Image (tube, helix red, strand yellow):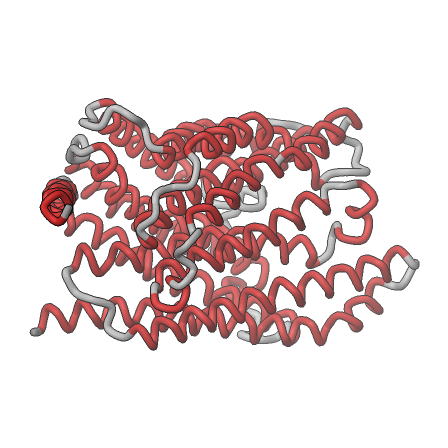
Length: 463
């Protein structure tokens, strides 16, 4: 038996070596380093914006520092900068290893690295200067949207050809979601290019509802599934609980999510049948959510001790809990009876933070914490500091979700009781104070995690 075990270990070691040979460490390191930069920059703007709720005169009256200019930078920046840059970098690690071959036309990615990040920098400058296309989460100037579209299209081709050339015949579920995320987003970016000024009237609002949910549900969500389905089994050293469940989740996401975008426009002039389809689809999203969470908890069986000692696993676990809470919010607020007290309030903002940041950005952080030491050859500089970062992020996002939910419900019920709008603002102002401090906690936590990763690699270089 001992001899058999030794042979098995040797095979695993050889497979690991071959997998390490197919990745470009320098390329991944550069993508992740840029991702860390945006991860520090764009969420920090969230604290600035939160401060403006309680101190509107904060930063003065310079146009480029006003709420209306900074908010789209924060929202678009978290989507395309903090999350997407990290995700793309991690794809350059995941795809070659799952396929057993180097990335096709790897030199494209070296060029796309600079195109992507310089375009983000230009987009920030243009938004600050007042160039805004009017669709929430789609405010980037047309030139920036076109560059993002071309970059995503190029990455789509690279990954598809690499997957076609794979040595491993089965397609692991992470690759299913990766293919879907990139193809769906190519189509959605065409909608963003054409939509804001070419679709008239109420249909423009309907199309915007679809677009913004496609960003979250057909880009960020499947991208997040790519990460958790790869890094959870890898970090806790347990096989995925059920491949069948993962495929049920994939097809249910593909079938139901495209129709949910109208659920923020209930009681609007949009056709009632479209609203009803959105409500039903929102309820049916329990299927992909359940499959991911069932697979998550099943994969963790016998490995819960990893929560105390495994930093990537800690982030994956807390992200999954936030996913459960955030998706419960999303389905509830899609019901007509519950949308009355929640619409136009910070309850919706609680939902967006628990899902986009609390789930998917945190899963991206988990992937980065897993990959960074492996591509730099340097261990995490301080597990204790990273653990502090984890708890600050967890405390911040948990408190923010709770506070914004309570604040939104209070304001919503006051408005339903015919209170004056200014009365509701006065009543909820204390919540905004707490919101600012929760954001500071999250930003400090991010800083600790990034610092301990960068410090470890810098110490390795100087040694």
